[in-house]
Length: 286
Ligand code: IPE
Ligand code: IPE
Ligand code: MG
Ligand code: MG
Ligand code: MG
Image (cartoon, rainbow, N blue to C red; front, side, top):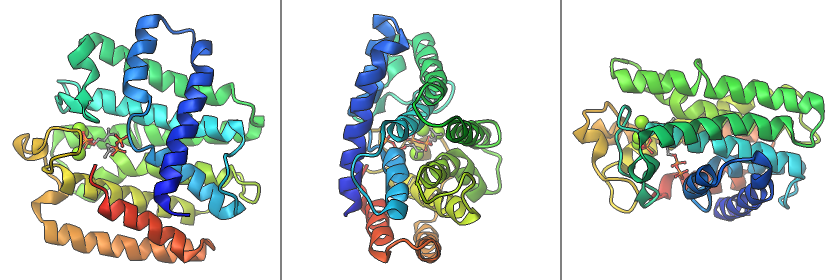
């Protein structure tokens, strides 16, 4: 199956699950409206798709997974969405547009955007804790998500990005984007009936390399029109990114593609599957 089809299914499944669970969150009408704005139908759903894709490689089954696994993907997308709401705030990247729409703080003010982000982050953990999975599976997923999103993962990456004094751009990118993407691969692995409670390091390095790949492309796309974000923002803000040397960036992408192909071969994935995923990553326009 083409990876693009995995993305479409993932978007549909997490949106449907969100709508099923929304009333039980007990949010006010105002908060629900704000979260609908940033969540529903918004974004590529890459992390949920990667979680389902990894599990499907192991199971050989691409149909809609059981509800607790869709819950885990929904939780990951909640954490990703919160990270974007906060990333766009004036104190961080100060962006007015996201996914072709005004950012949350532009519509409702900074305080509401901070709080909507907080609500998404905390709801992610509620979603997993109250899902129907086994206690052992839930603890494994919660621990990985907390680690990937926290001070040694995505937050560390955002700090390195904001302070702009990191000499190691790859490390920054692996933390700010790679760790959550690696978490999607790990949770996909531990949600398969053939996977173990602690996926091997091959799953982590596959996810981290895909995450670095994803962020290098994000840097290269920054000055393009049609991403749904304001073009050229990184350069104007003096951000250090891979766009500074596009040729070196392309070389690094080719190396990472080779590394992920070898890793996925070792993991027993079909070669066509990783090639289709890499094709999506290298040709995406937003
Ligand atoms: C944007 O992520 C922020 C990064 C980590 C690069 P995506 O490109 O996955 O954003 P959406 O969810 O599709 O809008
Ligand atoms: C965002 O990186 C990473 C996180 C939200 C953790 P960027 O700042 O490059 O993402 P965009 O370009 O605003 O989507
Ligand atoms: Mg940023
Ligand atoms: Mg940003
Ligand atoms: Mg960017």
